[in-house]
Image (cartoon, rainbow, N blue to C red; front, top):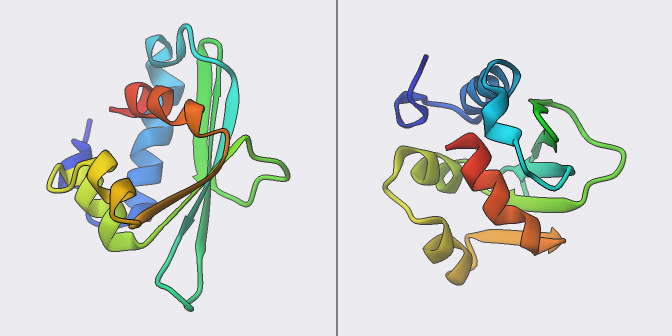
Length: 116
């Protein structure tokens, strides 16, 4: 199993999150089912689209644009990698506008618990 902090690209992070969610069902026990859309890219540049879906005892992550997301998280690749590598705290990134959240922001904490 790869440590998230050792991964180098957003696509590698999503692949590892997918592996964890599919093989470690305890990660999604007790969560509120939700679909998260991640928009990763530089300002005014192309975006990479990722979907993370959490259910009760199940979940997956993939490169995909979900038809409907409960929560949409927008950030640049450096911010995403800083968060997963542990050099940037998510709340600090949010407070300084490096992470934008649309939709049900109350679902964000459970995402962190599920994929950490």
